[in-house]
Length: 296
Image 1 (spheres, rainbow, N blue to C red):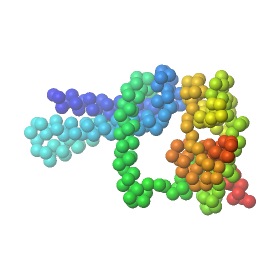
Image 2 (cartoon, rainbow, N blue to C red; image 1 turned 180 degrees about the vertical axis):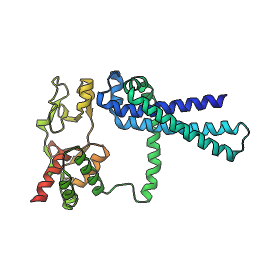
Image 3 (cartoon, rainbow, N blue to C red; image 1 turned 45 degrees about the vertical axis):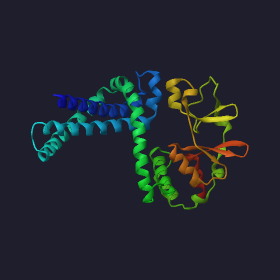
């Protein structure tokens, strides 16, 4: 009886994580209506949410497989047959559970988000460190094989592809940029821009224009705290709770260096320390100016 109870619990949690993953992707467009403000910061951190659902789904799917094996084995069936039977049964069961979970989530996404977000948030405190530990164990192996760092040309290719998908660049110009090899020798300072027109104070009560083309930064005194996440600002109404850290590079850094940093931060912008002032590097502007260099 205990095996059946454990199997049911594992499959139930597979259903929850699978349904939550689909609900989260669908519900993003609705700004997570119905969720409490305390959980919105968690919901806006896409990496943590997806990591949590991935770890939870894999963990409980594996648990269901193990439990089903021991349940069948407890009936007296030999180990070999128990493995085969459990494999077939659990594969079909998981397929059905995930299919039903995703179908259910498409119609009830807001209910699932509001109901299970507290549980997912708590589970993330375990899932995120586990994921980082796995990555830590994998990367040394990749380092020995010489794969720990992507070539920056690969990163540029990825970011240019994203720019095409976002409508910032057409495919013809993208091909030209990717064939242009001189960009590795360029310095960040050549593409940096003045920070002043795109900055607000932390204590400011006015909401910056949402039509701004460039990123908006937040300042406290003389210190730049980071970039303003407009989605978080709309949800929380607080500038303080809507700040995202961005990488900082020296004014004489190469574009090669800044691309590595912004990819690590999963952003498209970096602060540039220029002697006694701060400027900023924006990937979209970099592409536009690079196109100008190519055509010249």
